[in-house]
Image 1 (cartoon, rainbow, N blue to C red):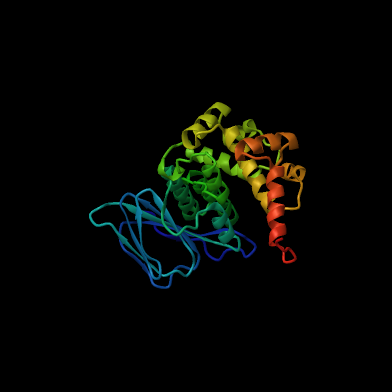
Image 2 (cartoon, helix red, strand yellow; image 1 turned 90 degrees about the vertical axis):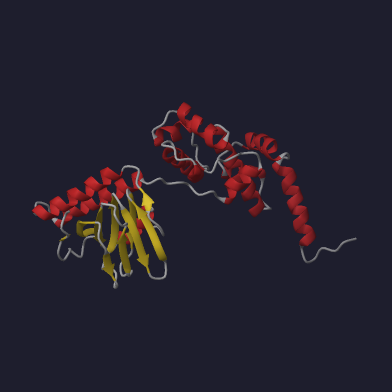
Length: 303
């Protein structure tokens, strides 16, 4: 057990600072007024239940983490007859909320860490540094930021399905819903998908995506085949075509050339792939949309 240690009053110039850190054996915790800063709880071993007024009961198992905002009343009840340890890390600073939010750590429920022992060791290092008084508050702030980065790295993140992705499924791209398949390769695959969805307008090649997530092109293609039934290139191409369709729907007066450029494709290639994907040329679809728009205009009268 690591007795709770406080850092004292932090420097107001610090955007992120360590407020305190410690652990306790599995026993109850009752804070009716909440805590003055953000808290990260880590359950090692048994786990238990967090009772939060207005949110109900959250079950946290061993190897999981829960983040709580300041001032949230809570009570922790450990599992009976199960030994374990609960760590709590207090983080303050003007930037802590956006940093934790951007990292995906502020969630409604506890979540699993794939490398829990690594994060636990990081927490222990913070406690030792604070207990021995060998590091300045500025140095511990750096350690806190590194801890947040490590937590982000080992979270089992899944890119949520968007409307475009659902439309892709309707056009023949099958998804296995990655959440249902615990696979070590999901983290890299999800990062690859996020890159494709973010940079579909750029000259982004599959080999660049593979390099960015640390995979070979062959391995990344295997993951896409396993979970989507297409190659990585086909996924990226269909995403661009779907975004091109959306853009044309939102800009009925635009040209096909503008649509192609908007999704980073050469116009003739865009037209050919568009027809293969949707069964008609983008020009034909544009004429139909313009006709519908004309018929729905206030000045239009049927003969």
